[in-house]
Length: 173
Figure 1 (cartoon, rainbow, N blue to C red):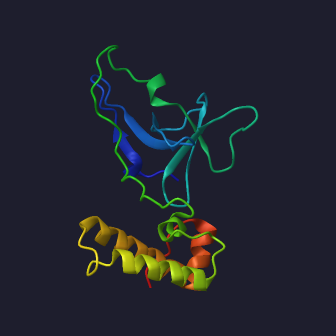
Figure 2: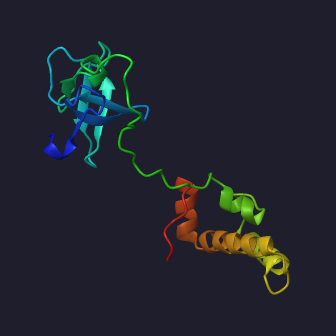
């Protein structure tokens, strides 16, 4: 279940013990000791994407099948008190920003229940107002690109349905 590539070393002065970085249910990074221990209080497992996850074991939520019982490294770290380094855990890239559900509709100034004709009418009105050939303002050109992107997604029935269900822009054609 665990591999050697999951291992890291504690970087606090005087410790250097092997640890594994996990992601808690709240999305925080938690260092746990490298090996399972019977007196631990943290359940650790590898999810379908190969990411180590962790959670606290309680009476209401006991250890499950694929989980291993481990101890948070802070409980066993032998570094000298008061001496720490500012070495954060390895960072994952930030998540891609996703539009709030309904953002594309707001760009065109229409409701989610708008028909294809309402959509086309709103797009054409904004295109006449914001097109770079008719409006020299650079902010208008940026807004025109966003309006065109919104129209591109919402004018295709399949892509509009995907957007309505997920709130995420579908991939380009």
